[in-house]
Image (cartoon, rainbow, N blue to C red):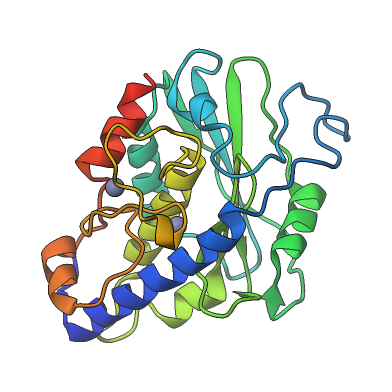
Length: 261
Ligand SMILES: [Zn+2]
Ligand SMILES: [Zn+2]
């Protein structure tokens, strides 16, 4: 893993602020109406609920013992293999699934925009998504866009109950250069964080076993070392936190998840 220099730490501070800001918007951006379940891919399962509302579908094996993650990307925006491997491990660790399958990423045409709004992302999913929940298999969707979010510097969003989006132009801009974290480390952090929101964290579908909800900052955790932490003010925190690796869920977030199993 890369050496963590000052700029690395600074970058991660920025990342956390950015993913946090974004989630606060999308996490409360409930979209429960529309064409769910009645489109070209009939399904009893509603894929257009708000993030966190299918927390039990993700966490338990009661209704779904298998999870598939469909990954699509626009040209030049494919995620690293490392981040895909890390996401699979993260999901296998925290979800009660007999199997977690990340499908091979598939390229889709560019949307041709410099920036994409949450509504643009929803439209793109409607256009391109191919995997839907069926039988005992829960389907999730991740799309990598070749632009920025409409709110600049946002790296990723959770925008439906099974859907997440990542903004490759922004990710590439702050990773992989001299003194910058690796692209895999940033993607993994954002990937896992957004899937944490799909699991109903924090206090957004999944009940808390202890009070650790940073309610001033949306659906985030009060524990500074946690993957679901909102933001920080000191580089010392990151020096302790990262040690060169992607942050994990802290014991409170883990306890919330495990209480459902
Ligand atoms: Zn967040
Ligand atoms: Zn936490």
